[in-house]
Length: 375
Ligand SMILES: Nc1nc2c(ncn2[C@@H]2O[C@H](COP(=O)(O)OP(=O)(O)OP(=O)(O)O)[C@@H](O)[C@H]2O)c(=O)[nH]1
Ligand SMILES: [Mg+2]
Image 1 (cartoon, rainbow, N blue to C red):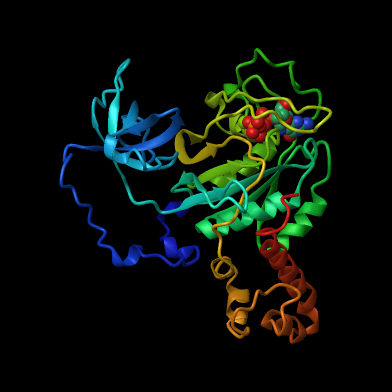
Image 2: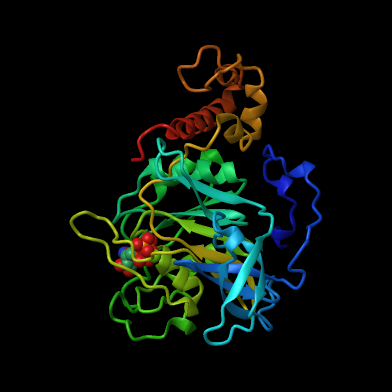
């Protein structure tokens, strides 16, 4: 079943002024506007899909648009649903005008770093954050994963941790670190040698093999299928450091995407920011399309200056309930006096204690990642 049908409150509740606002759209002008989905943004030009953007790809048009003057100060991002007027024919050289942004169901935000209060909205209306982390080349950094988890829960999105390059290192340690938080984990790897490898298939057209990427290396098909299963019916955003394999994975999932992939520097272990802007792509599932994936440029950090502790707690129902008993202003960190979360461990039945302790430790790690170093 498609999880798109779920109400937003099925995730976690967030304080929102939205409830009190009438949902009816006011259309004082531009009553001839049509709705488009923003799939790409490039220097003031927006790529939109206009028409039936909900799953039926047969009668939709790719339209290029710019923002109307009244939206100059408003950010329009990939995933936004917008109202457009003007030339929506999609013909060569045509340019439509975005006149309104529809209400967002979620906004994934990040701050450049924690001292910089300037918020960037990464993607709108996404359901799931896929944190792509290489097991090697570049080395995994749990600080970054923690911060992405926090950003996702803050945005009301679910989290999938995708560990790539399992042909180079084992996923066991990271799996153990994130399972107590309830984070789902999938693992991908390069196909065993004997299959076409990096470079050997540069000319190959990847459209007909499950794990094949356009001009890149071949991922083990069963690992790609496992990822595809977790993306079905959802709008998913891939984030992670440069070089972890986001575009490689996208190419395997959506062969016609032909996203450029880069190489990782042998010395620094860093990627070189091959992808420079976010792009949304429809996921092919059997004959039909089901769900979207958004490829994003590699980020160095995921600043969380905008995230509040109370808000983060809402994503952990059990802990949130216990924390109601905490003294006012409790930070819930390990050194917090009389934190009720410590009593919760003390009072636990013997057989539940290790699991509770692991969960609380992980939660506290997330809490401190808001202010800690991004390593
Ligand atoms: N060994 C191995 N290499 C991989 C795997 N997946 C991707 N790579 C390689 O990692 C390098 C970087 O991959 P990209 O897909 O460009 O990484 P990206 O995350 O899109 O990077 P940016 O666009 O810079 O953010 C390429 O050389 C890929 O061939 C894998 O599972 N195993
Ligand atoms: Mg990329």
